Length: 428
Image 1 (tube, helix red, strand yellow):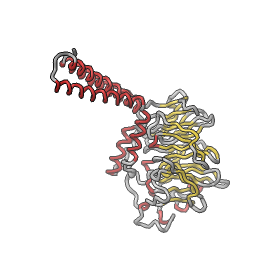
Image 2 (cartoon, one colour):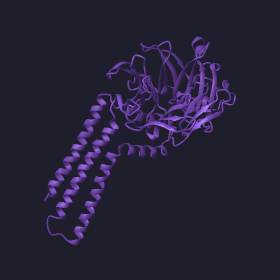
Image 3 (cartoon, rainbow, N blue to C red):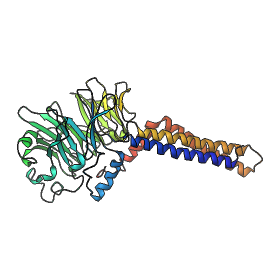
Image 4 (cartoon, rainbow, N blue to C red):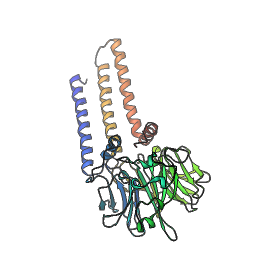
């Protein structure tokens, strides 16, 4: 028979060990700077990987900053872009940014960055870290872009923090000029800027916005969009995130000519793989899918080891590079779904398993104690029923913990799907 005081000692020891293990786990990962939230990831020609990242603590702090309209500390070191080699070592970094969401290497070798919480697109003279150009929507008179956007319009009334939430820049070379396709998420607007004119002439000139699509809070166009890209047919594809769809926009008519909205939840990326294939990052379904544009059939998908993934790219070797975002990892997976390269550790998964196992042990302790009392001597019928009910309750807890360990990815997907409908997307 397990005596009551011995049972309390076991239970107390398990709880203490659970607390110590959690603290050790998170402190270790924090000190190693492994608890991060990667956004855009790009593979360079030399095999290294560029990663836009910040810490989880800074992601949480963003909500308070947005509510209170507090500026970022310009000396922060948490918001950065890093270059990681195949061995997982950081070989280059630039700090002092504001939760950068996108980095793109342009023909000059420089980097274009969507410096999100500083509301700007910047150019960095890689391999140095100097900012040599900046496009800042706060400095533009938007009425000159569209007369309908008057003095009272949101675009002409900058806030202190996260006014635009600029989250993407895509570079394109035309025959005689270069362009930047830029996503202003909080504007519900995508613009194309004449990069050549901006470099050669005055910066932030409204006349250099040569094309735009969207309008503030006009959900019939796009709402809280991400990652607009040029297609091979000349159209523009956009992840209409709050609309839970991918839309293709005719660049001339500004009409939606194709869309995909079959079960998506907050998609944040859609890349053209070929004329009839798209790679979509379906965030709150925790999956990456490849679809046929014509039939809309899912041709391939990856649903493991990611939590609200940010974006994905197909590499030259056919593998898929994935930003796991809230899972804290960057993954390269092959077509069989096997991880062939990884940066970072899934702290969410680790913490999930650690605590589930401890709960298994605690519930098993409860079951064994109640069994010892049930068969350890004479007890009344009422006491017997109470013991049996308690055993059943502990057994349900044990089986539930076992089930969520086995079905971790399905459980996580269900939680994020529920969260999708509860999140305030003005802040997220």
